[in-house]
Picture 1: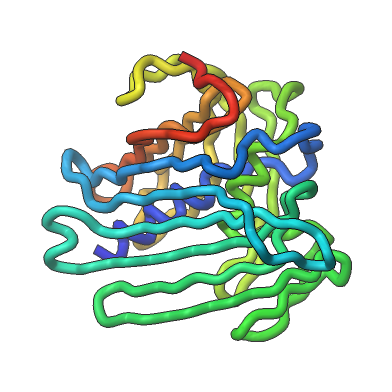
Picture 2: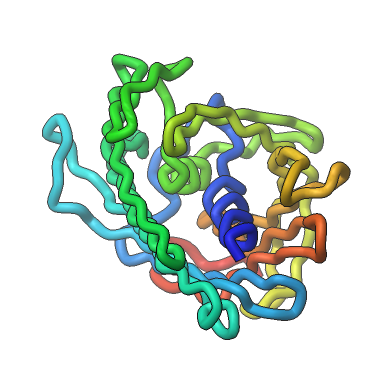
Length: 256
């Protein structure tokens, strides 16, 4: 079960972080009030669900207004009976640059409990958390949640098939870089209808979860919203698929 939830975290929060060195569009593609609901299937069984939403925050950092970006993930159905999971992630980001100031997570998985907090100092190239102080390679580093929203607002108009990009992210006690390849366009059949999508392939490392030749694919709406619609990856036993169940409060019409 913990492997399934780990995959959910990787697919859902990492899968959209694809391009640190592209320019951000003039305005964020999301707005306060946006709510996205996802489900994670292991084979034909729904193993977990998640809700991500954007709200205006009352907190200011360096006297700048912020968005609060929240993710609630939990097991469902039979999985919830045998191994109950209730995870919460919050990131506070600058409304203009979309870079994070503060991140916290509250992990409840079975009897396991963990609470982590991190403060980002982009100018000083460091992250200060309850686990220590960490130096960053650039002055643009993200937590997993802010990486997801930042990437959605990047200008990808000049992307060509085969182009690859990287983004730096902080997780627990480590700063890593994720590489993602743009692989083309596709019309995807979803619960919300047929949607025009862009397809990406984030890098993954084979090991205890993924096969040696496993590839993770992510489909994103080919419209102003850039909403992840589906992600799929083969694992050592079976396959895991993330699907968008519903979307509300979108800034633009969805690309059907």
